[in-house]
Length: 187
Image 1 (cartoon, one colour):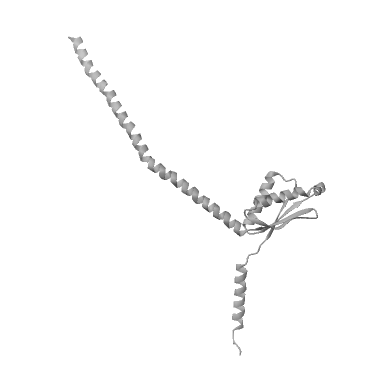
Image 2: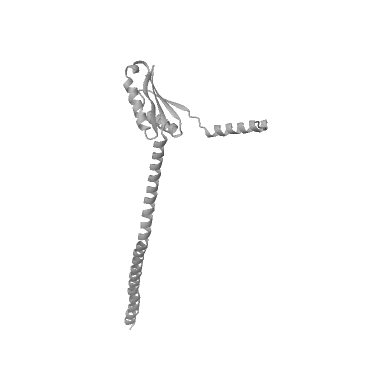
């Protein structure tokens, strides 16, 4: 049995399948972040924030502690820094290769953990919904109290008008008395 087909069409379809499979695949890059045993707090925070950003983008991160001179005598300092980085990035990653000394460097590899990232994203979404609901509730309460406040504000205005009317009344009486007094003097 034999099948007659168009060779050009078969080659075209094969290329289209290959192109579609490449489009669906993602390439995971390995990013590297280098630390020193005597790193400052600000530098540590900045580098760790970038590590979390790389993990959020789906990249693997190789963390390297570079030792120089006498720093090689204290590998526990490098291990302490790697543990801190792993702790800070724990909500979005997991450790693939645990810290190990490789010559003058100590290396650890973190990979993104999709389950943890999804849980963190869901928790942030729930928190945003709660804040939105909390922001709406005081507005509704304020609207309920607003008419009462307006009614209280109108009452003093009425009292002020009554006080003004009383203040004007004696003035009118004083004007009425003045002509009588003038009349008695003229007589």
